[in-house]
Length: 235
Length: 62
Length: 224
Image 1 (cartoon, rainbow over the protein chains, first blue to last red):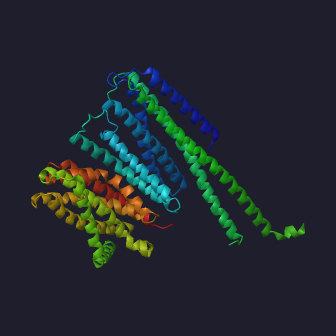
Image 2 (cartoon, rainbow over the protein chains, first blue to last red; image 1 turned 90 degrees about the horizontal axis):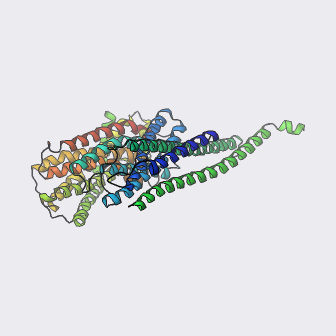
C-alpha cells in the first residue's frame, strides 16, 4: 500500500482518536442518571455505525463483483467484512459492559442490541464461508451472493425486532441512550468520536485491502508460473 | 466515581481488540511479502530459462 | 415455464419413488417436537399456545434445512448441475423448481408436525388451525426461497452442510419472529386482523427473498 497514504490516514486517525478521548474523558460533562459509565456510549455508538456501514459496503462490493467481475471488488468486500466484524464485536462487548451496571444484566434483549447480534451472526456466516471455501474457485461469487442476501435481510431484521420489542417490551427498560442528548457538548463529543472511528475503519479497511490485493497478485503470479512451465514443456 | 471499573474495562477492551486485529494484519502482511518476493524471484528465473532455451544459437555463437 | 414444470415433476417423481427417506425425514421433524416437549415441559392447552407455536417453527426450520439440501442433492451427486446449466433452461426456472420441491417437502413435514403438536400440547382440532395454516405456509415459502439459494452454495463447498444452518438461521430470524408470534396468536384464537403486522413482515420477507433468490441463483450454479 502506498506508504504516504498509510502514513496520512494513520496520522489522521490518531489525531481524531486523541481528540475523541480527550472529549470523552475531560470535556464532556457526566450524565446525570447513569454516572460516568455513560461515557461508554461515545465509543459504543460509533462502533455500531461503522459495523452497519461496513456491512452495506460488503453488499455493494458484492453487487459490483457480480456485475463487473473484477477481483478488486471481491478483495474490498472481504476486507470490509473483516473490519466490520471487529467493530460489530466491540458494539456487543461494550453494550454488554454498559448494560451490567445500569440494568444489572449482561444482556438485554432490547431491539438495538438484538439487531446487532443478528448482524454479528451474519458477518460470522460470511467469514466462515470465506474460511471454509477458500480453496473453491467460485468463492468470490458465493461470498458476493451471501453478502447481498444478508444486506437485504438487515432491514427486515430491524423492523421485526423492533416490533417484537414493542409488543413485548423487555423486562428491563429499553435503553434510551442515543437520542436525548440535551447538552451540546455531548453531541459534539459524539460527532468527534464518530469521525475518529470512521477514520479508523477506513484506515484498517485499506490496510487489509492492500494485503488481500497482494495475495491476489500472488495467486495470479503462481498461475503465470504454471503457464510458463507449461509453455516450456515442463509438464 | 462509581462503576469506574466498567468504564475502564470497556475502553481497554476496545483498544485491545483493535490492537490485536492490527497485529494479525501485520503478520499476514509480512508473511505475504516474503512469499511474494520468493515468487517474483522464481518467475524471473523461469522467464530467463525460457529465453535461453528459445535462443540456443546465440549461446553457441558465444 | 415448461422447464420449471419439467424439473419439478422429475424431482417429485424421484421423491415419491424414494418414499422411505421422506417418511424418515418427516419422522425426524416429529422427533424434534417430542424433544421440545421434554425440554419445555408445557402445561398444555391454550395457555401454552406460544410455546406450541415456537416448537412448531423449530421443527419447520429443521425440515427446511433437510428439504432444501435434498432438493439439490440429486443433481450435485450426478454432476447433473452442469448439464442443466448447459441446457437452455433458465436458471431462474431451475431455482423455482427447486424451491417448490423444498416447499412441498416442508409442507408435508409440517402437516405431520401440526397434527402431533395438537396432540402433544393438548390443543384442539378446530378452526384455529385453518388460520395457522397460511402462517406456516408463508414461513415455509420464505425458508425455501432462502435455503434453496444458500444450499446451492453450501452444496459446492466441503463441510457445506455445516455452513447452511450457520447462514440460513440468522437470515431467517425476522420471519421466525413474525411467524412464531402470528402462529401463537392463531392458536390462541386471534383473527387475521390481530396478527396483521406480523403477517405483513412475513409477506415482505417472502417477496424479498423470492426476488433476491431468483435474481442471484444463476451466479451460484454457474461454472467458471
